Amino acid sequence: MRKTLSILGLNFKQAVRDKFFLGAAFFFFFYLAFCLLLENLSPGESEKVLRNAGLSGIELSAVFLSIFSFTFSFHRERETRILEVYLTDFPRTAYLSGKLFAYLLVSLLYIVFCAAGYSGILIARGSFHPACIAALYPVFLKTALVIGWTALFSCLFSSWMVSILCSFSLYIAVELLPAALKIISASAGVWENFFIRVLSAFLPAFGRLDIKAAAVYGQLPPAGFFLLISLYAVIYGLFLWTINLFIFRKKEY
Image 1: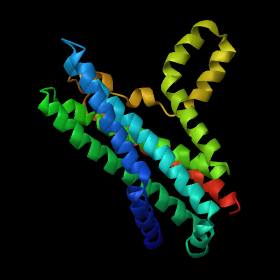
Image 2: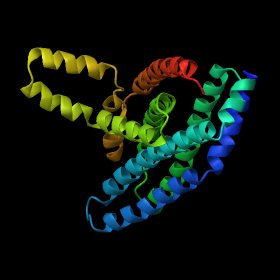
Image 3: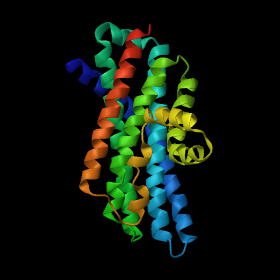
Image 4: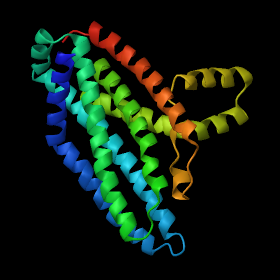
């Protein structure tokens, strides 16, 4: 546990000081400034536009931060052979667990930081509703799962570019999956439908975690919903961690 916490602390400090953290924060507030302009162009819907744009901006910038920061950190350590030094003193389980938990904390810190600025702007514009803040919890869970498969691709591929492309491609595919399933189910045959649905069962169900659309209108699901999505994220996260650990132990660094 002490070695895991050591790796966690080192990676957390490095990630917070990294240019990607500041870059993602700058992108988000620049995006919010653009959304304020859109608000003025949407009379009668300004509150909903600002709420929806802010929640979407936090999610997108958090995903960008997680993918780029984790991937470049892992590949930089491997290319500079710092990873070899770590693995001589730390078990692979401790190293991988510490790194994953570090970036979970980084994403949480980033979302809290953005939530504070986002809330201030909503309050100043008279558009604040507590549901918008509650909707950021599923955003954190989605970001946590993104970190899990980003680590998987980083362990699997030796190229940082391939890792990033695979991570973003999977994120886009999972986001578009519900709409794609509706289209495919209407045109595909029985066996094709069965195969696609079995394949989709192994992908994270982001559609079930997303409550941004309801939060924009000040609506929230019951408390049991948050418990269920937390349980789902933990189970799927352990599934990703197991695959990551298996690949990481088999790879030669």
